[in-house]
Length: 129
Image 1: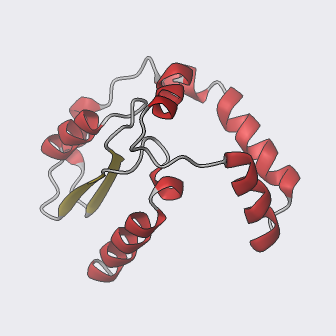
Image 2: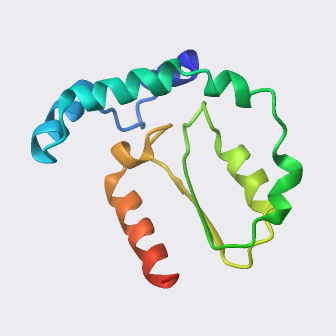
């Protein structure tokens, strides 16, 4: 995952984000304590959850998904590549599903392509109220 994330730095068309500045900015503008944000990041990065689920098989259960689904991927996401999304898309049974791939980003679409992320999520929620 570390190397996959770093690979984005070598692709000129990937919109780069300064995450430390983003964290600090959101901490102030959203009134979220910086300590909470940092603890959340450290926990999610170091929790045993990733190791635990890496040994589980979920693909055969994807057919059970029938609720509306919005799949958002970055063209240059090497952690969760768009091909993974296409596989997910074909396996789910939802009649109401949409997949969007941003040409500007890698793994952090919500930060690297805020406009696309926001417009797609808002439209999806409005359409599925």
